[in-house]
Length: 174
Image (cartoon, rainbow, N blue to C red; front, side, top):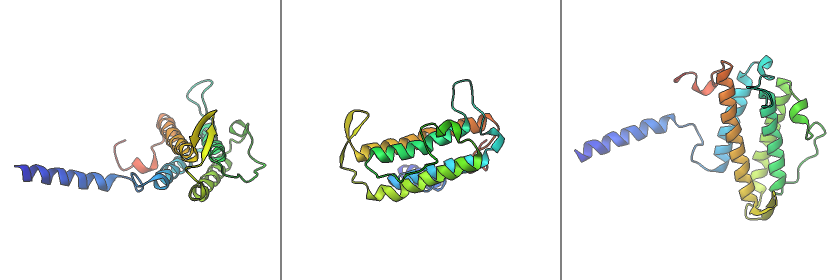
């Protein structure tokens, strides 16, 4: 009986492991890549005319959420000690002013590429100040990872509300 239970558990774990997206549980960069891939896939799946959609007054639109992620990537890398390249296209009001789908996705991808390029170079044990608190660069990078996942989840809810099924779940439960 114990062998049967063990075999069933092993079978269930094997089945589950085949449905887990690549990168899950494999470290910081694979987790970031997972969130980045899904965020871009979702942005590409949402029609351009829906980039202005927002769930209510005073709540970020689709394009504003994507630009918030983009600006967050730059801001958090800078807080972790990364010397940022000057980008005349980005400013604190870019979240509201850059709204065209192609522009938003291009800038999102550029910010993700900068994260990938910068992460291995950051001394994650370096002491930094973050919103007035003492922490490490690694702690700030953890915030960057969580921030990307947080807003990816927000975009999933937005997409489903406007009738867009996330591309990675189109073959599964709707």
